[in-house]
Image 1 (tube, helix red, strand yellow):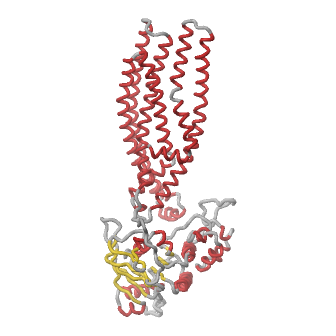
Image 2 (tube, rainbow, N blue to C red):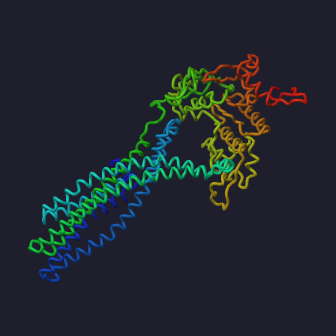
Image 3 (cartoon, rainbow, N blue to C red):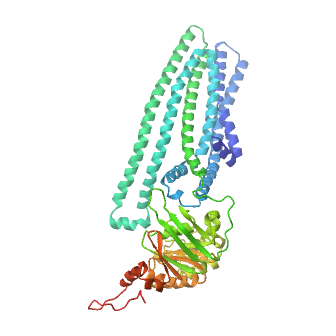
Length: 604
């Protein structure tokens, strides 16, 4: 509650204060209206003159005016608070997600479920909590005012009305707990539903969906998840209906008993006409306000339970420890060493790396090869410190990267990931994201595109480098969709992002030519070779012909480096590298009519 109020005050102090005043003052207006009505009725029944009746009448008119205008201003101020709080909470949520330096949280299903709920409630929950507290305070004022009036008329009836609220409170609190659990369960279901729905609506997935004829299958998955979510929601609503029906029946019985007592008291002369009116208004006011108070208490408890998911995400500790006093990262002069590195993603999974030892010399190129699942991409994640080794260390000129600010480490690395990202932005922006300091330097962006062999293509687009590379959004100031690039051109675009960071100490290229044709692959590797000259680089590729010119080649197998050396050395050893190279070379051999080999392109 305190956090929610603090967010409201921080986001919109004036609007929050104004809304609080209007909300709290409205809690006493029903009591004031009832008293003005009693005074007028009692005055009329005893024959009071117009002057005596004018005061309660004017008071009634004034209060009615406040009652009419208050909600209008209150809704406006509440809207101001909600919008500003929503902006603040969204900023805090995105900041919290970005605060995790590694990838562990984003690969944790429980965290992702919490994040889904936090995204749904984050924009409104703080305002709802603050509003709930103010509404409860308003209801307390209303209940208190009517209860004092009711005690003055019949202490016994006041006690009976209050006693009827005890089971209501217990029931509402129980319902709120069930509701909060249901919302979390539905959120998990809806995250899967969103996944299937996103596939159906995805242009990328549409090719396989249509070719394989799996549209109806995916639609069935969507509907199955929706039915599951509906079943959870319906069960909660059925429970609420049963419980609240019983509470309404109890309220009606208490109200009916009170009305019967008031009628008999009036016939005995114990209550005036105004007194009966006041009694009925007091009973109804206490019950209505007490019911609203109980509902708001339950709703606030439910909202608090939902707010816990938001706070859990916002306050979760970083997934990697960050040194309080990080060690400055030296300029790379000797090299990067992975020393006895063991790693697995969770304790219940197999080891990906098993005592790996590897050295990347400064100013030289190291190629890493191995079968799928050998741990090559995992090694890249450790070098970028998206994860920490389970055992062992990654050393940068002898400095353990765990002692360094992760942002500083990554600032010194240029990387092309195998699963590179495509951004629905302009061509210039897609490249400029590689180095935000050069985001507006068109000359540097075009130079990077030129190195990646993409400049002429981007320059020929309808709006040149300002062309939107997506058809999902209509660019501002245009009337039509953007332009799509081929998969190979997107590969070059990602490579241009890496080239924009050319001044970094380490370049990592993970399958840089996987999506390219033979001619483009040859051209790109020549460019990469020129770019790597004199630079520290790590090249990962399944195409062994692309790594043969590296200073050293390391063969990864079973989570360990099993062979190292230059291309010729490894062929002479006749080990794993030689076997893999021969297998790939066979795929390039032509045969004559008798089936004999004619030429070997890969081995030349």
